[in-house]
Image 1 (cartoon, one colour):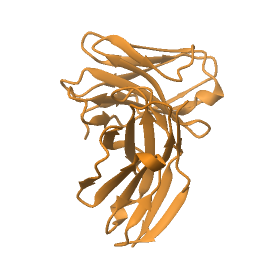
Image 2: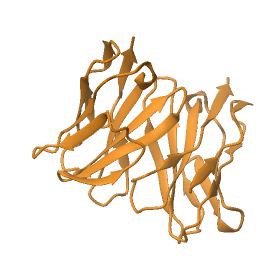
Image 3: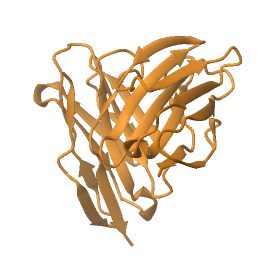
Length: 115
Length: 112
């Protein structure tokens, strides 16, 4: 069975600090997909990234970067120079199927960026 | 605005009742996904439809059912409602290439 662990329940940082959100996953499959989602205080869900297990290249998108390490079953998310608008709950997720089906979510990490 | 619409935004009902949640995907998106977010269970994938066909099923109760219509909108039917069904229900669609997923604003269901 697949499992996603986000050990950090809440993190607080001061604006402009860098912050890394940890995600550790368990799966027996060799092919799987990993995801990150953001849920701001307003409540909507926002898709951030999808990465398949064959692509271990790190990804950078503006201030966001993701570090995928198969050896440690981790898919960590770093926000550089955090801003107040980054305050949200961030969910890591895993799917053993293609696409977005049968996703298992972690419990989320609440990030508070203090001005 | 993601382009995915969900109605109603809020719903208050009583135990034992039946409700229907509606979702319209972004124009051109064939896939619709339903999720439930509750305090007890967290975020859970319920079901996916692709161009009218059920594609994948997650932790969806037998009391719940869904369908996708020819115009690609989808409905999630929840029956014999229990207090524990109170949750935020999200719908999402994905672009034809599957690169990005778009979420609706959610329907907040309160069962009293």
